[in-house]
Length: 453
Image (tube, rainbow, N blue to C red):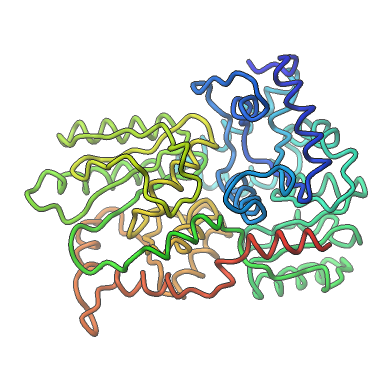
């Protein structure tokens, strides 16, 4: 069980605190533990095999995307630094962190429990002991930070705003949770919004609850997509013929596992044909059981597998093709038990490679997939915010709902030429590549807003 009295972890905490105080752009989030990677960053021995506790890829990847917008081509702690208080929860409070992940995974992997989601969501965000657990390390890390602090998670933003810290809070989805309004009247907090519709919703909900919000502190910036992902579109050509490159992706909690099992069973047999119509990559993230499902289905379908667990240390910008050649007649699986490495695998392999993604419509994947110049077929959404995300990209004709039970026929239709001899896939990719800049420059906009606040 993790122990805060690990000497390396104590020293990592001290170094994180100092870097956060000194950096131009201090960033906080609540997404996962990445203690082993922190040890490596701060000059200590790292164990690559210890599993991270993960709540969300989105709250991690969005924070990194904004940091990259500030860093440029290499990590520079003077320009930006990210901390997650989850890394420094004490041994005493660790059980609450594990419990939070277990609840999230249970709901994510069992569709029949979906009706409990709203209840748990409301309870979990306001009263689960994780808030008690992360508060002391968060306040410790930020105690002497004088600059505005950029928050990628509403729990962190609310805790800091209540303490009088200057906070720039990112509203990460086109959906305004009640939690965002908790301290919205305070003069020391500003908000970054997905789009104009979300801003209108924010101000309307504040008005309905008699919360006096200064509209000047509610700014549309666009979603925070990693610039390395946006760069992928520069080399991506809309599909017209040849094998279609598909990436099937789970979310941070291993979401949509039953749907993914069904998709792989239907799609993998094609890889055994003489001229396969598609190639398949599977992003399992940090979820070992999702990775194992992919390996089992491939074995049952007599399809080879290529498991990629090591990122290319020389490839920081994702539009550079990875050195390792993919075996295109095998199922390529991206997996790592730690969130930083898993995220980098996704950036290095999936976004530069895939014509399209089959994934849930979420901040985990949807913004990124569209920004990379890819089309989307969306899996079952998880909450009202994902319904909103789904609507955004369907309206832009970049995405449509996946027919999981009949995915082969759907792909055949989407690949066939329609009006003007264009397939739906080609049209969707062209739409993605001409998407409004608001959806591409959010990370840069948010970084600039925070630096000038």
